[in-house]
Amino acid sequence: MNSLIRVLVAGVLLLGAAQIAVPRVVGAELATALRSATGPGSTDSVAVGAVPFFELFQGRFQSLDWRATHVRAEGLHVALVTASWTNGAVSVPALVNDHELVILRRGQLEATVRVGETALARFLDASGRIRNGTVTVGPSSVRLQGTVLIGGLAGPVDATGRLAVSSDERQILFQPLSIDGFGLPFRTTLVIFDVRTLKLPLPVRLTGIRLESPYVVVTARSV
Figure 1 (cartoon, rainbow, N blue to C red):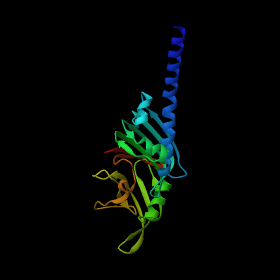
Figure 2: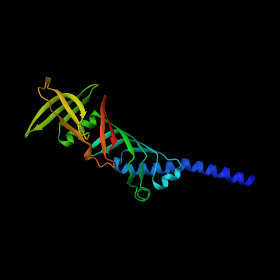
Figure 3: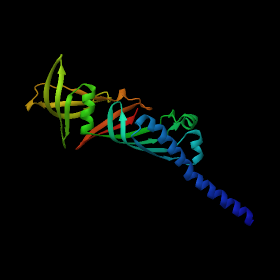
Figure 4: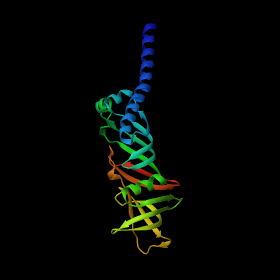
């Protein structure tokens, strides 16, 4: 009887250890797979929740929390990305053998992206939208200064306005309220970013945008 009890206790302890260790190993593999997409300078960490742990052997999990800093995304330097993914599933062979994230079940993803004003100005310059520009993020508005190319002619612009999500929830728009200190008699918009240019493993829609000087904070959710 004592031997049986010892065996049972040892089994419980081993299962408990595996419940802790296996999700950590899978989280490390996921962080490595994501790092190939977030750039060599990024720092990625992933915490996986799966009970019982052997669900992970089939790639299933209840929760996955991802945090990454200094992410490069299509020329845009992102200061911080945090994401919470629930009830998803990934391919274990692709993850272990190729360090590649292949999604088998989408589940639900919610993410927050934080971009600094300097990084945004560099992105706009590289994309040709505003040359040699600066971006100033205030508590309730954004100021864009630089050179804009319109109809083959280049001219300086100093515009203050707000950022908004497009009606199809795929683009971030700048809506100027004044240019060079003068109010606009008509409404116009400038596309700042289109989420469809990203090679995301899950399709997402933008759910909100807010200003936290000197950062622009965007929230998104999987479709």
